Amino acid sequence: MENYFWNSTEIEQEKNLFVLIIYDIVSNKRRVKFAKEMSGYGFRVQKSAFEAFISPRLYKKLLFEIPKLISEKEDSVRIYKIIGYGEVNLFGVNKTIKNEEIIII
View 1 (cartoon, rainbow, N blue to C red):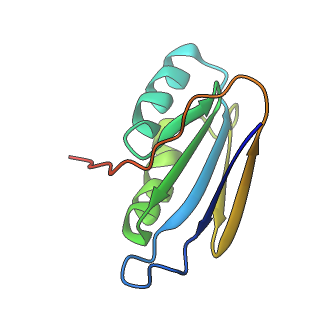
View 2 (cartoon, helix red, strand yellow; view 1 turned 60 degrees about the vertical axis):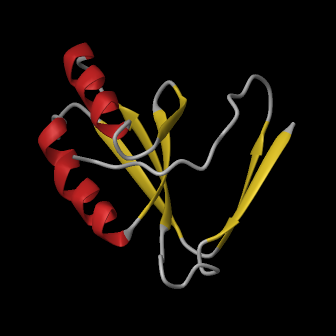
View 3 (tube, one colour; view 1 turned 90 degrees about the vertical axis):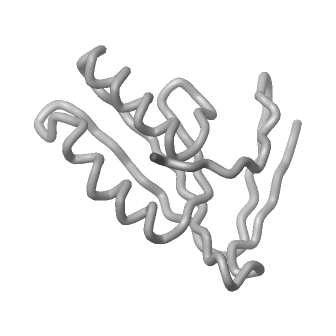
C-alpha cells in the first residue's frame, strides 16, 4: 500500500487544483486522442483515469477542450476538482507518482 497527501491551500501564491479525470470513450480513435491530450495536463493512473495538479487557468482550458474531444451522445467524462486537504490510498500495482511540472505548448 502507498499513500500520498496534499494540501492545495498551503501554497497560496500558486493555488493549484488537484483534478481527477475519469472517462469512458466508445471510439478507439477518440479515446487515444483524448488520452494523448490528457497526458499534457497530468499523468495516467489507470487505463481511463488521469490525475493532474494544475492552475485554475489550465483547469478552465481543460473544461473548454474536453467537449471538442468527445461525442456527447456516446462518451462520458467526469472531472473531480479537489480543493484543500486530500489523501489518496494506492493498493496493488502502482507506478511511483512524481510531482512534475507540466508545460503545455
